[in-house]
Length: 58
Figure (cartoon, rainbow, N blue to C red):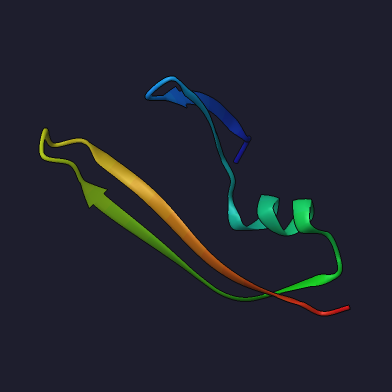
């Protein structure tokens, strides 16, 4: 998945996949867990939220 650049409420938003986050953090961090949540907004739009837990392994 390519990094997507968008704006929300006038602020820049960058969305990352788990692998992209891992790459950004580098080899000094170990992925412990991840969870993808899909939320439906009041107007019926679906939003994805990715939660990750990394540990500093240096």
